[in-house]
Amino acid sequence: MKKLLIWLPLALFALVFALVVNGLIEPSDRIVRSAMVGKPLPTLQLPAIVQGKPGIDTAAWPKGTPRLLNVFASWCIPCVAEAPQLLKLKQAGVQIDAIAVRDSPAEVQAFLARNGDPYARIGDDAAMRAQLSLGSSGVPETFVIDSRGVIVDQHIGDVRAEDVPKLLAALEKAK
Image (cartoon, rainbow, N blue to C red; front, side, top):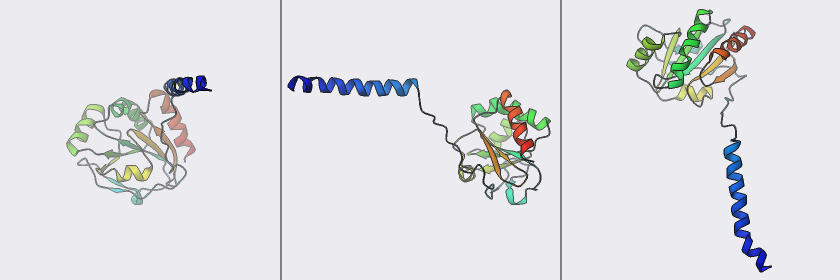
């Protein structure tokens, strides 16, 4: 019995080591999906962050037109990477509105000047309240809003070239 107790600490160490190695090799899914998918878009009233472009007021949005709602920030590197794809979506006739998270008017204006402006409206979400009400956990994230104002899909991370057809199909289905 004493011989078994001597080996117990080594066995426990080996077990903990195996669990840690397994967690490194096969990490768990850390993506936080929004619980708002399938629910009406919450009422958002955000002031404009860029002069000459309206802010976000979801109560005044016309029904009948599906759209994308992009959560972004000028300081976000993946947001820069997705800019060309958002411009392609705009060229395809997609209505894209945006929420700028924890940003400044000057920085957003500079971001749009450098990367293009695909947005019809940009609301200022300095306190991240609108982002949280959408169930968004980071930037960038893009939500597909159907013609009735219901969130029907969520794209987490930057929109890449291979995502454009998927988003166009989701918008077509959302009519």
